[in-house]
Length: 104
Image 1 (cartoon, rainbow, N blue to C red):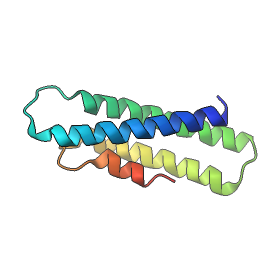
Image 2: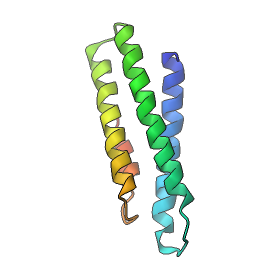
Image 3: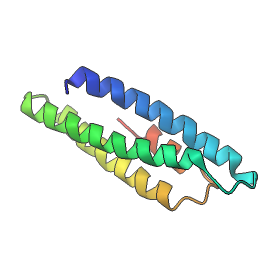
């Protein structure tokens, strides 16, 4: 995968995570047994962490700046933290959305 493709995928995934996390948070007061938004967020977060891993590897192979490589590594860590937070989320706070704001 090329860097431009990874960046496009990254943008689409972040947008999807933000939207679906806010929808999940907003629907917390409805008594619904299923929660499709949470499953979408979890899958998107998993795909995002893989995209950041691919980005990290592409940047390392391409002799990019240390700042860009470090940012990709940090973003992967933040996406994995968001994934763990989303798994235990009680829907009172839009946790994954707040983690997406921290991305560099």
